[in-house]
Length: 513
Image (cartoon, rainbow, N blue to C red; front, side):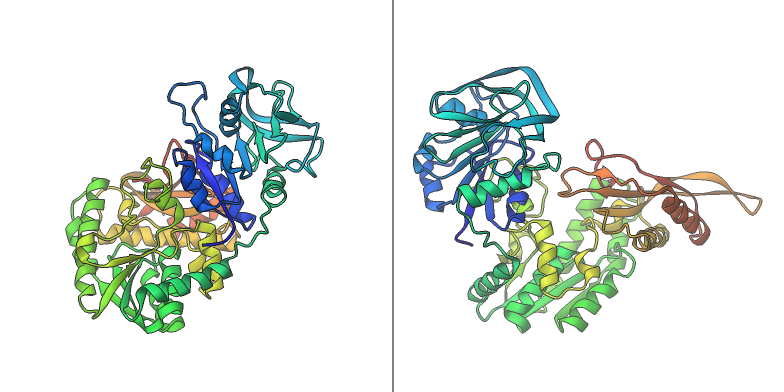
């Protein structure tokens, strides 16, 4: 993909993806790989550098993950982070044990020898610690770069090899100098020039897709979200009229979603767009169903049938394109060299079932979400598409708690539009990762015009997140929430109470079902 590759070795850290994101932000291409890869595979990949992630394990445990010792013989620059530092110091002659005083959270650190790794970092700065074990001592092959009050070996380097290690986490925002430290490692230790660019990705991917697709046709399933829209735009740029886009309107979409897709791809890109209006079919299949898992299964089944039927009308179609992203590949255990554990067994990596008979095209499978947005802008997609909040596959069915009816969906859409309009007007839409309304399967007593009412309750949900693995509820201004509530109750018939969800993920999920 690029001549500059850095490998992030995953030892089970919750931060492995965040490390990768930070490296990409510094314009260096990286991939997350398993810790149990043989040294020969590392040699084949020819990385400019290797970063060992953290881990919940203790290095002295019998089953603690270790790296193939042959990796050290490759003489490739290494940065060990937290467990990564402990693991390789342990393997290279040092000792690791339980810290006399565990460190969790912010800690002041004192730099005694900046060397290349800590060059430009103030002698006194703050870092983010998260460890109960620490390196107790190292042999004469290592020297100390920094320490804290309770951690004498907070940063070390090998005297003769390009091996560095830090006990703290540079990838989190709570380490103010973390970006500088990673940049120092990538540029000054590994010799990377920062060649990773979205424009380079576009040119290379277009050439690869042209070669793969040849003169055949390729079908792209559009959902209205940014991922599938970017895939479609990239394909249209690569093979133009050979692309056929299928958009299934299941009647569970946000307000104006169908019209937006038609406008973008028919009017902007002049695409061959096939719209399958299956609203009545989906609503009929969902009638009376309240269990969210059953809803998902029904929607998945119906979608496959509708998509399959529409695909028959496209002759010479050999390929199916979808918007699989790099986190999807990692979490589903789909990467050849990636983490072996499957985090999301239900995820749609692999997409539509194999019996459809198409070969997959997944041009975004090396990208993170923020990179996809930059790619969409580069390809000329409107901001309304590029920055559209994520939307669940089952659509509004999982935001309409209880049985799904067209009447409840209409109420939900009106509430959702008001919420998003007010967020846009107040400058909060781009500050939130995802925001939406949920209609609850309960009613409450109210008073309107001196009359008693007994109507629906609507919950508002807005979260801030970088990767959607974790999320915190958005601290929206109270006057903004007041405007949203007033408008919904005044303008949407059938709602007399609005509540705001202040749950974070974990323990709650972003969606309600």
